[in-house]
Image 1 (cartoon, rainbow, N blue to C red):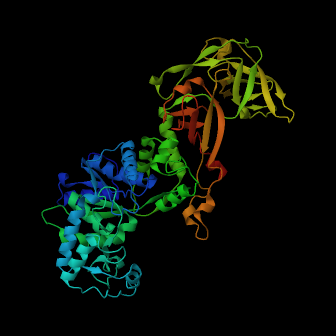
Image 2: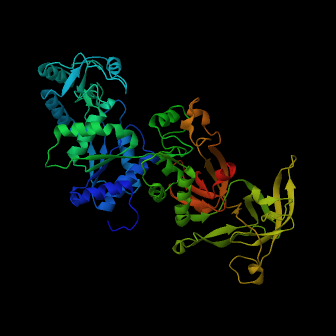
Image 3: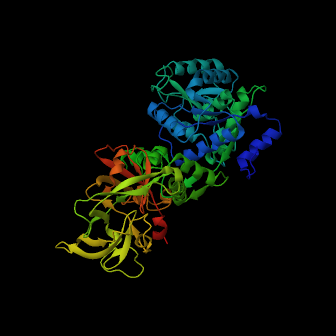
Length: 558
């Protein structure tokens, strides 16, 4: 490697292997999702790890779908996963499926039966579980463990041909019912499932278990390093045992190694729990912007660069840790600050009337698109006598620390003029409905007059009332009120749903935003980063808040 940064422990494993006999062209990695749901932020870290290693070592990375359970897997999830990986900016060398190897896996299973290393067990799953024993007590052999090879082959053939009911038989590896690792106590390799598979249809009535299919798939693809999360550490012994049965010394033997999950605060990433959020209508779907799915993050306005930066910054470790979601939000702000145009949007509008501005006149003011990008150019904004400003930008009476508009004091309208508050109009309830002000005609931004160069302490944004567009703005926040909803041992994670995770308002936005493309992020000046949602149309704009300009939660939790 040409990089001078410190290596993580996974890279040390690879470097040690290269020194001890592996060749550069022996290296091959894989990302192996099961297509039974949408990918989430935890998967994004695994994607960045495996594909990042591929880029670092100039090695192929396969995208392999571990599609061994037709009861839960769908083509919809395959398509979504491919979209997510591509959107993150990665290209796979080969698109593979465990189902591509069903015949080879079956042939190997038959060979194990012939060698006396596998048998058909006709007990129920409950009976098999009861015989497993405990970590401190050996298991009990199945009464079918010593079936003849001929009978095992006959039954396994019947299982394959769909002649056996679901649950009637399983194929088990014959290893050791007294093994200290309970996963080695004659694990199940195949079960009967009369379910149509999204790729193979009704060709098969038996499906391989994950532990049998995964390592052998790695071997077929000649994956050199199979990186898994820590819960698979106990499975490594079984992974290696299965490889021992089929390994050709002339071929690369995959090596499984484990890294710790990086859990994200204020969310859950269990597919089962995410499914419950969808099914119970807490969220609108898998791509709801409150969800930690990659599709949800994309719809909320997170960028591939932000997610990759997040994954790189938290790295890989051997011990699990809870990462504050504020760190992910920081990565989003860092990237969005560089790439977004600054636009005018008023979320809680109140009318500002400039009394001495000519009635019916419209003036077009120059506004810089993005000060972080000199090549982003500028645009024109319409300015008129009647403007919308944020209600929070005015106080009828204010102390010296309030630097926005108040009566008798001056502020600058962004890209426009200096104004001074003069009076207010209120309704019967005392709510301010209009703010009246006067402007200095010589104070226009960009002018070289003394009036324009005069310093005032505050600058506020605005939108011309005549030209403003109404936009639905969805103010998304964290889905859970507690940082670790999974940690509630006495309650349900659903008890911690944040009732303020979504607020929908109508805002006034500058007219040019009707030309914005869906998925384009922008910065609403002084407010936060937003993205145009797919629900939008040119006649009906819908924006999602990605993140605020600052971490408001940090203040609340202090």
